[in-house]
Amino acid sequence: MSAQESGSHTWRPEHLRLAVDAARVALWSWQVDSNRFTMDKRAFDLWGLPWADEVSFEELSAHIHPADRDRVRAGFLATRSVAGDYELDFRILIGEEVRWVSARGQGADAGIVERVMFGIFLDVTGRKQAEEGHELLAGEMSHRVKNLLVIATGLTRMTSRSASTIEEMTGMLTERLMSLGRAHDLVRPLPGAEGKAALLGDLLSVLLAPYDDQGAFAGRIRVAVPRMGVGQGTATALAMVVHELATNSVKHGALSVDAGTLDISSTTDDADLYLTWAETGGPPVREAPQMDGFGSRMISRSISQQFAGALSYDWQPTGVVVTLRLRKDRLAQ
Image 1 (cartoon, rainbow, N blue to C red):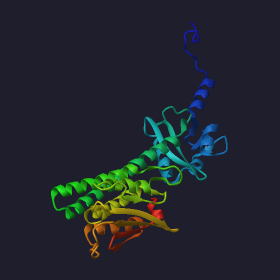
Image 2 (image 1 turned 180 degrees about the vertical axis):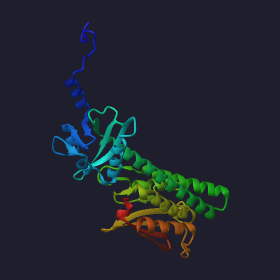
Image 3 (image 1 turned 90 degrees about the horizontal axis):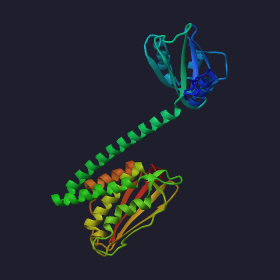
Image 4 (image 1 turned 135 degrees about the vertical axis):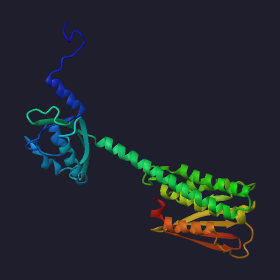
């Protein structure tokens, strides 16, 4: 019975070339004494070089990324004495383009024929870019988790100083942490040019929703701000500032009484966003309180450091008016 009749297949050289082309494998041979390479057309295309009968190791090395060049040179030389299969991954430069190449072969002169070693090059740029993306994502997640732990520690200290009972501290701390969680959930990609962010209006509305119905009439908190993104690097900081202002209002200001209202509006110029937090209908303001507590210092420092801005208080008889000046470019980060 022939190979064709039995369902098997006889490989021919042209079939091997078809398989190599399908796998996009580039072939090379290395004359170890002269240190010169003979390569197929795909290998020359991969390296961005014009076709030639052969190319020297030094000519190839000139196209290796400077950060990888010494490692690759040492690695190739080491293959002469280290037994087993080897794989060297490195970057090459094609003009300003960076490509990742994987060189594979056998060490310790295995398979050497008349002082010539054989191997392949593979373009692994896509895989390396995916790996780098995963590493960046893991690093970003680690960074954000560390930031949240630092903020949670600060909130715990702040709450312990302002609460009078364990029950009050538990309630205040739980609400603060839940607000930070809601701000974290809002950080998502937006269509257009806003980037990875929450919409400012959505962020403020979600953070203030728990205070909009405290046995009072619905809709007493009004938010009117322009459509702009808040970057994931600043959403948590802004949430902490908003929650501190809301907590003070629930304790002493407009949100502490049924008839109190809160209006948040904004104006902008070329560089800055001005958020105005205006309370009315709360207990009459007799005199401006001292704003030197831990929470006040913390949000002032956050506005200054995170947003390159400033925070000011205007104690009107009808309620406090707080103005937050925030750099627009910082807000989007």
